[in-house]
Image (cartoon, rainbow, N blue to C red; front, side, top):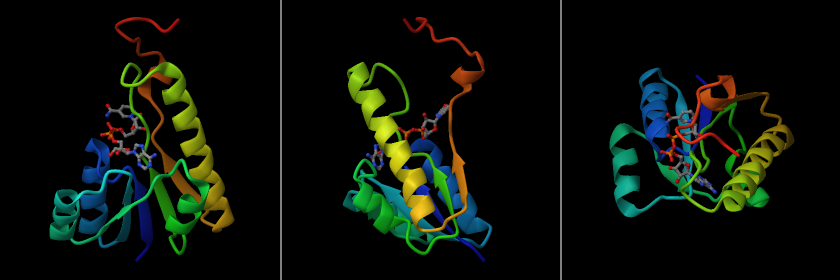
Length: 129
Ligand SMILES: NC(=O)c1ccc[n+]([C@@H]2O[C@H](COP(=O)([O-])OP(=O)(O)OC[C@H]3O[C@@H](n4cnc5c(N)ncnc54)[C@H](O)[C@@H]3O)[C@@H](O)[C@H]2O)c1
């Protein structure tokens, strides 16, 4: 059995990934910056606990990934237009760097990272500048 950390565990993709990993017998460390009482209850009902962590903070990322065998990295601001562009770029860049660096620091050799289908050419409704 492996212990898998899922970042963005409270998000659309994260919830499905956490449930699937648990169904396949893995231990899951579920991480998300949004971790209210209702979110924690929902995660407890499917068999794990939700740890609140802001992964733009390197110390929190290092701490949260201690002792895991693999990371599924889904935490991000998932689309343009939700925040000012600079905030989205800066937040996601820092978060992605922190997760990969924290995985390396903890000697976690496997990271699954959700990129985006837009990198393969799927156009935005309004093309990027
Ligand atoms: N849903 C899609 O169709 C799709 C398509 C392509 C790529 N992706 C990528 O997959 C990933 C997940 O997408 P989603 O649709 O589940 O998004 P989502 O917004 O539902 O989930 C993202 C989660 O990340 C969390 N998060 C944000 N900032 C955080 C921080 N600083 N620290 C910790 N957690 C933080 C949010 O609270 C949220 O629960 C994203 O990287 C997104 O870009 C999604």
